[in-house]
Length: 115
Length: 115
Image 1 (cartoon, chains in turn orange, purple):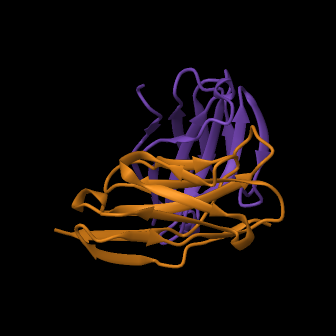
Image 2 (cartoon, each protein chain N blue to C red; image 1 turned 120 degrees about the horizontal axis):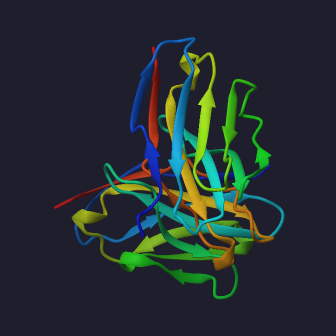
Image 3 (cartoon, rainbow over the protein chains, first blue to last red; image 1 turned 60 degrees about the vertical axis):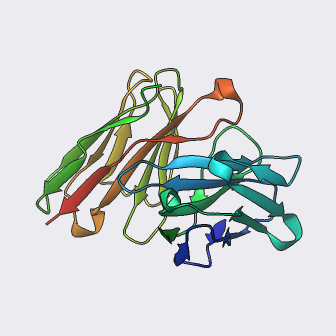
C-alpha cells in the first residue's frame, strides 16, 4: 500500500527565511505527486503537481518542488517565505497510470511565518 | 468557477442518529470524490464516482456509510447510526476527465461532531 511521510509537523519561520518541507512516499510503481495547501479557514488548494518530465516543478506563489526518484522524495521549497504563507501543507501521491486520482495524503505540516 | 460546494458546513448529531451531507461539484466535472479528515491527519479516500457510477469504495467505508450520485451531478453521503468515531471533516472533491489528469478541486468540507 502507498504511504506518504511528512517529516515536520510544525515549522516556524521568520519572513524572508527559506523553506523546505520534506515529503517521502512508498510506492513501487510510477506515481503522480502533489502538494496541496490549506490556508486558515479555506479549502485545500493545489500548489503544484508532478506527472512526468522535468523533475523540478514550479507552482503558484513562488513554490517549487523537486522529484528525486532514487530517494522517493518530493520536497517543497520556497526561497523567501511571507507571512501570507502561513498555512498547512499536504504532500500527496497517486498511482501514475492516469485518470482516477485516488490520492494518499501525508499528515501535513503546519507552517507559521512570523512577520 | 464557482468551486465545489458542500452543505452543511457543520453538523452536530447525537450518537445513533443518521446524517446526510451534500456535495455540488464544479459543473463540468464528471468525477467526484469523498475524503475524510480527522484531527492531525491528512485526508483519507472514502469513495469515488465517475458520472453516476460509484467505481471504488475504501475499506474505511463501513456498511453504515452510503454515497450516491444519482444524476451524475451532486452527490450525497449518508452515515447511519453515527458513532463518536465518525467525528471528522468530510471533504468532497471533483475533477474532469476532459482535462486529462486534472487535479482535484476540494470543497470546504462538512465538519461532523457526534456527541
